[in-house]
Amino acid sequence: MSDLYSIQVTSETFETDVLKKSQETPVLVDFYAEWCGPCKSLGPILERLADEYAGAFVLAKVDSDAEQMLVTSMGIRSLPTVVLFKDGQPADHFMGALPEGEIRAILDRHVERLEASPIERASELVELGQYDEAIALYQLITADDPENYDVYLDMAQALMKKGDLESAKAIVDRLPDAQKTDPRAKSILAGKAFQELLAGAPDRVSCESRVTANAADSEARYFLAVHLIVADDVESAIEHLLTVVRADRQYNEDAARLLLIKIFDRLGNEDARARTGRKKLAAILMV
Image (cartoon, rainbow, N blue to C red; front, side, top):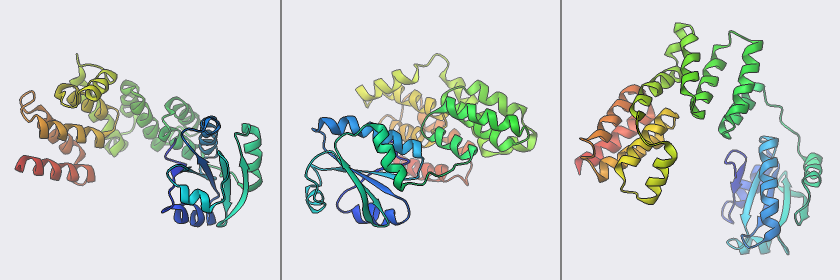
């Protein structure tokens, strides 16, 4: 379920996340249960539509087993039941796993699609992990506006997140010097430097598998952190390295702490991630 357009709702959050939210944006509430076969076939359809409509409505999921009082108060008698709220009130509903076309027709009666700009749409695609689609859209934008250096930087970041750091760096290298001081450009150039640490290291999938199998595998966690830095997921990388420092300070001659210092230095003192990371590291070292 995409965190962009879908939320999990409980009886405590229903008033805020559904009733109040629907006064601004339609909210489609899916009452489901894990044991319900039709729910399992309907859920992915609703999630796909939520992504397609890109914020024109919010998909709210209610676990009926966990929220029985809410289900009773709403008069839900069978699962799945889907209720569309608008202006704080139920505006439409259906029961059972309807075909996608019928659900789309219901939505279109009540939901006004938002027209996102190409740049906004490309950004949404990056958030969804659809990097190839985002990069293709960025290429179309720059073809029409070849001096839009901001979009080139966004495209380079998408390439880096995809794992194509060489192409990302090639874009940055071609930019005017003024754009190379942008934080996005610095992040890509730093990622290229960190990539050298991965020479001969296990790949990301192997590191993730090893950490899952053995949380105390310091080598796998260290190199997973490096992979994450290269992919621009700096916050996760910092947390993994802090875990190594906390549990195995002497791993590879204090390599995790030294790498953290290098990350903080590259981020700069004004970066909130660096400030938070330094405080956490200091707290660990004081123990």
